[in-house]
Image (tube, rainbow, N blue to C red; front, side):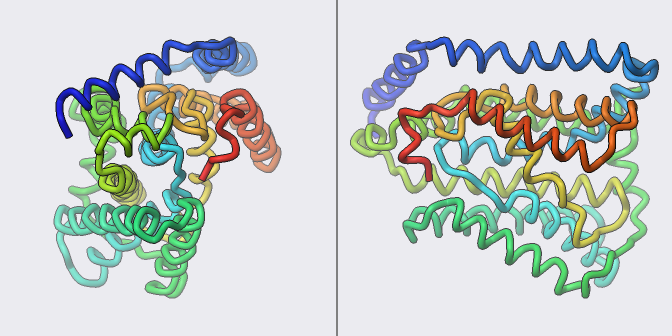
Length: 335
């Protein structure tokens, strides 16, 4: 791949991004308006909402794992694919770490390293099946979802695995910076890395280009399959880190620990401005969707909204976000 070809693709991406429509402006401004509106609404309905303890100790901590899972889902969607196994992979890695520590006496850091490597390999597996097997990504990852969920339950007989590793827990819930939980700090550092990866590297440029028009990238001589597999490897890596953080925070692993992450993560990605049809958005936008969902849930909890009704609201948010963001010119090639 020559420098000239790389520059050509970069210019082409910029030209596509400059063709802005009214829908693009809605996608750009919508999350900010929604976020501001929710904060005003809940600040008026709950005295506790704007407290430092609630915003940092509850909202920020609770959305940390969701942000990592949403970032994991962002990269496949950027290239016009999707990874439905993200939540199941969080569970599988978390259970693996718990079992290694509790049943085999493996140290916390070593168990986390094994879990992260395992999660990345699962991502590579998804990518290889998707590219080399020519199987749509939603079918590949749907199958992986079932395998991972079944595997996590089968290994433990469906039971939770409790372990004692004080240092591991302290690493997550402690505070390197007074007042800021480590889980929030670590998540923000990873978030910054994903932004750099998407916006400042060749890998990121090609990921956007694959979502905009894969044929152009392929004709430029780029090894398309390598970048597609790389996207799913990044997804697996981020899910593994999320699983490690979650299991360290709660001190146990359970077959249902990742439940409730898939739909909110997809909603956050799309709401943030990354269309399911690919080519636009990115991790820098995903945090907006995560904040909207986190504040929406926190506000509804503070005001006593029924949990089942909360799921209805979340489903409605997903439908609205997809309807506003999807590029209908490419709807026939979503895969």
